[in-house]
Amino acid sequence: MTSLAMEGSKYHFIIFLIFKVKFCVGIMVQVVNQKTFDGISPIDLMEATYKAAENFQIRAFFEAKDEILKIGKYSEQEFYEILDAMINAETERKLVLDKMQGLEPLFLGEIAEKIKEFPADNVIRDVIYLKEQGYVEEQVEVKTKMVTKKIKGEEKEVEVKEYFYRYQAKELPDDFSETYFEPVSIVFEAGACCNCGWCSAICPVNALTVSADELKLDEDSCMKCGLCFTVCPRSFSIDRANEAIKKLDKNLNWSDKIGAYINTYSGSTKKDEIIKVRQDGGVVTSIAEYLLKNKLVDAIIAVQHSKDLWKPEPVIVDDVKDLYKTAGTKYANSPSLSIMDQAKKYDKIAFVGVPCMMKALEKGTLYPSGLPFFKNIKYKIGLFCMESFPYEGIIRLAKEQFDKDINELTKMNIGGGKFIINLKSGEQMDVPLKDVQQYARDSCHFCEDLTSDYADFSVGSIGSQDGWSSVITRTPEADELYNDIVKEGLIESKSLKEVKPGQFLVEKIGGIKRNKCKPVELKKPNEEAGD
Ligand SMILES: Cc1cc2nc3c(=O)[nH]c(=O)nc-3n(C[C@H](O)[C@H](O)[C@H](O)COP(=O)(O)OP(=O)(O)OC[C@H]3O[C@@H](n4cnc5c(N)ncnc54)[C@H](O)[C@@H]3O)c2cc1C
Ligand code: SF4
Ligand code: SF4
Ligand code: SF4
Image 1 (tube, rainbow, N blue to C red):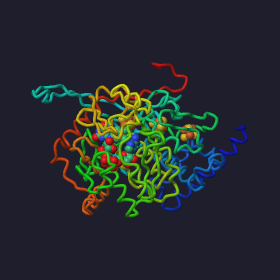
Image 2: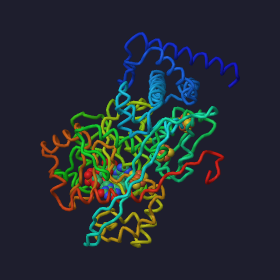
Image 3: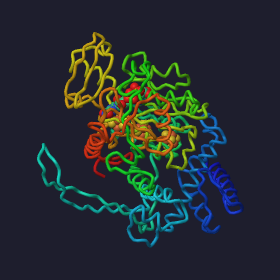
Image 4: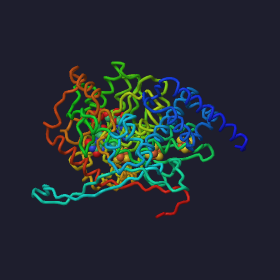
């Protein structure tokens, strides 16, 4: 772009902001995600909005307007909704940062209590983002305590570390410059990408292509808006923000191992057609069927076998008759979020996926603000997941561990510490789970979530008997819906606390996964290892 053209677009951008500030000041503004700037003085708001306008990423997005509209993923209205969300979020962050000046290091919840001008959830997510931008420092305090644990039947005193995170605005040097977010190719290059496909669905100029095992960035198309990094579940963590936000909601139960929840159940479908095709309790397919039949959603994004058996492909199902083809677990990764933009024609959709995908959706809701990309996602049905495999890994696993061709398999399952296969011959075989872990995807080692903490419903086999699924409802609406399905007689249900091994085991394995998780270390382009 020539400097004259740059000046021109800067001019247009400033005009846009002036309109926006006038709008904010003149009328009581109700912005995209219902948050208001009420209570902020017009001068402070104007100053914060102008500071927000300096943000490199917002400018990059605004300046690429023509290109974005030409690509056609987002309409002009959607373009402005995303821009609005970016500017509102950045403006709010500037105001939050201002109010953090002079405060001592505090826990996220304490900061939210001090800054009353915005909803507590917003303040908490803003502090985490400000940390990533380089404005806020995280201080970690480690305390040790002794607890009694039963190890191999014997009670033992063991030392347990506890971590406490406090945040404080940094004193910025004169030459400070804000950290801007790189495209997510750095996440892939660090080996941390879980290939969920979210970044490619979001990218306004289709510069990213994600398959089950690859991520490709078209450098020429990328306009460095940083949106992909913002929404990626592996770029920076939202776990501490989530914990602080969820703990504010007194309706929710909190577990360090399985996250926030309303209730836990063990469920099994009562429908014979679903029993024939289900993985465990057939709960996922039952919920999906109920949603479609009662027109609570127009379509479900799920996974079915591709032309290669056991190689999953994401599908959009808008007819109940196609739903049963999706039942059953395929242990290879499916980049299901990558097809999200193809479901835009539906007003309301449900999404079925593994925990990393649930986190991706949550991140796209927190940042920039209110999920401006795809507003039609109504329900998130998350699966439990310890690890997934590359498709080639599944083929090798069948061959090397069982001496079988993958096409002979009718089912794969993980249960009781074993990897189990069923064959067309009717035979069942198993090997210890530890023997198949060598075939799992390396990127799953960066995953701390077993139970889809960010879903509305979480469903898995751990904790329940064969033919049953463990179910965690995480919102009052999901809990009500699950109980409606039970009342309709579609699912038989018990409390997960009353079955064996029950919630205890889910929490135990959830805790093991959290402790095993490796931290993600990202390198900026041209940065040497150890920099
Ligand atoms: C990769 C993977 C690993 C898992 N690991 C564990 C585990 O360690 N412990 C545990 O308790 N549970 C695990 N699960 C969940 C478990 O296998 C069942 O999916 C769950 O218990 C629901 O059973 P159901 O009978 O209710 O599901 P069903 O009614 O049979 O429906 C299954 C649903 O899963 C979806 N699905 C299938 N494969 C995939 C995939 N690759 N990606 C996204 N969605 C998919 C289908 O679209 C369908 O909607 C895993 C699931 C997956 C996909
Ligand atoms: S959004 Fe998903 S696919 Fe994209 S880089 Fe992040 S983890 Fe990988
Ligand atoms: S790849 Fe990322 S940074 Fe580049 S245009 Fe797409 S979303 Fe923006
Ligand atoms: S272990 Fe984590 S990263 Fe791997 S597929 Fe499961 S949820 Fe995704």
